[in-house]
Image (cartoon, rainbow, N blue to C red):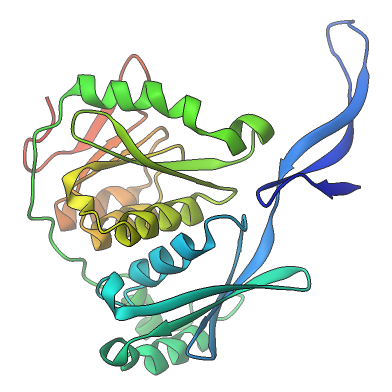
Length: 271
């Protein structure tokens, strides 16, 4: 049985079974809300994602930018979150120029079957060339360590549930400027990108820190956004490394309070 605590979390009645001989227990536990979130562009369905229904305007802008349906936030006219039975719909309107590629992208999505990717054309679209990261800025290990140490205190959903990812935009001095959370790591990243864009900030003026496995999609989202450095607390996949190298993204993995792995540093940003 679940009951709503707020838009981000609910409670579930659970039992705690102990291995150490201490008394077992029972009671409510916070769990993150996970719900279908549909993306609709100019009245046409595009995708349905599973995520936490918080910061939905940020999510709509960030997802649109990550999908390259708009070049920047100015091409997004509006994002309207609408609650529907058992989920949410994000009704997004694009400005004139951004609409031209939408029908082709929707056609491509229709060709993606539940079995995976269908056809060479689709594979080529998934691995489209990435823009090159041009702007570099020195970042010290102390700044990254500072950001890692500060992030833990800014994850209310994570603390309450133990089941949410966080994405943070950090200044080059390690200060945390924006933090977003979601049950899905991709969603948290899109929310962060959208929040930074909606605030009129330039994401190139800092780096991104993620509490997640470093998959290639997260690398690509960072690159498309223009961020010069991505730091993750877990290890990267082979394709994540390859895509970072192709684009010139500085990539740090297994970032902990005592050490980190520099996976890619083409501009010698890190010291």
